[in-house]
Length: 365
Image (cartoon, rainbow, N blue to C red; front, side):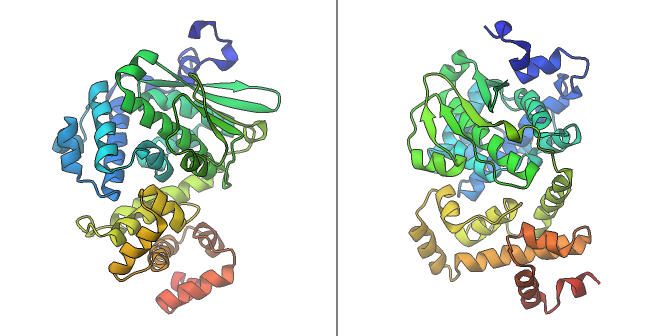
């Protein structure tokens, strides 16, 4: 069936494999295993944000956590990955775990976005490279790009036998991939991407939540997993400077979070979540509550019991990020203000002086 597709819409990995320019990532070596390992570690990290014990999750899923944490060539089979998704959703009490995981995650954490940026001039290039890397994370899906006169469609081709055999991995990975495509384009272009529509091949348990995260109408299809967007996005240049800022943030996360790993309070979990997902914008209280699978009112009540408000946590995160960004002396004050969500530069300067008793310029001097 796939062999009959026109060359222009062949799955990305097949097109890349058919050229002399195929990236070295397709060689079956240790790097391929490492991408899966990084992905699983990121999934475990997100589960911890949701209050799940990582050791218990691994034990239930047949994964040796100590072995996983070693930099070794590990490749887990489909049954193990399916069990991991199933147990993560169950223990977090979040049936939309894959959707929320995609909303919270940056591909830079996997070391993938850097390779995409370094070999991409436009969004079309970036999508081609991202699609070619899909098999490094999952063996259920492949991607293809179908370009029309005014719109293009990203299609996730999937192995129906594997989808039926590993239904939890299929469902959660499908949600995850759909969100990642949209949200990573935000970072590449410094703007919020709005798809025309998304189609998913299964019933939607919470259509409102899908449409909140994917920012467009979401429909159930018979067997199609697709994202439709305007052609104008394809020729937009990739802003590589954004990647440098994003990388700096991720490098600082482990330092900023040091000593807080064992604190299971909601305050700390939200703080860490915001810190690791604050690139380009700080997440709204409503979005955080939805991602943690609780109501906004419950979030407010739980934080009140811990003696803090959501806005106070946001201030903590902004302060941490501002100090880290400005300490590097790599970014202009107005860039930092924009990243942290300040519409007015003067408002950021006042806030920074309140935090440190210095203006940003004085701090950087």
